Image (cartoon, rainbow, N blue to C red; front, side, top):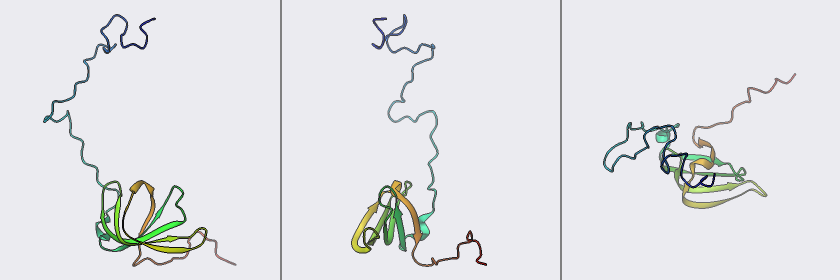
Length: 130
């Protein structure tokens, strides 16, 4: 009982596998592991929006903020690089400010849509008025 938590197991050498399996060994540098993982592809294909104006909305305490700018680059995690960015703040009072070139972190983005070609449509879930 006195050895509990100190790296030794019942009768075996310290840090041994109690089930008798061989210990895990990392491959030497320059060697690949047992199987190479396939590269993940991005969920969205943003290539058609490069050099186009897009609007981005955020989460995490930034619900009242939207930015609009020209998409210059992106990565797998949906991190975006926008140029000529204007920030539109709705709360406590609506105002805008110019930010220039910015990097937006992908995990904070909730809505991303093109500025050109988007139009308001009727809500299909509203009951017709009688």
